[in-house]
Image 1 (cartoon, helix red, strand yellow):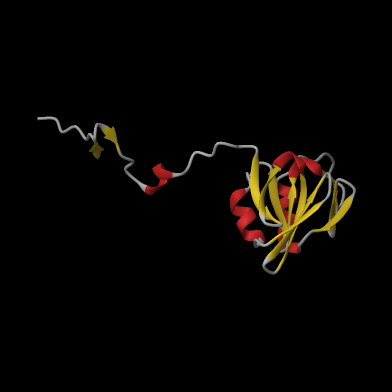
Image 2: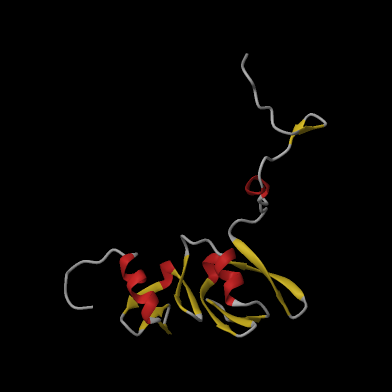
Length: 136
């Protein structure tokens, strides 16, 4: 006799088996909404340059200006796509394709210097394609 697992079914609809199956499917996949001055404001990922966490607030530097929102940086780290953003310091997250240069102390994102933490520098170097074997 063969046992067939049909999972949980309610009213003819198969229910998810695990919590992972219940992850929300977002309608807008290229942006997040942040609360700013009493409204939810859409911020497209490709408009973001970098973020700086300052306590309970995060400064989001965009191509067109800056937003200050009452969310900790860790909230953004969890919500942003990891293939587009990287944490480079305990207080900074940057958009990967906006990085123009890297040295031991900072990265240039757009035209802005953004500090790199010592513990994040090597991970950053390991994640990029580089040519040459000169000192770093």
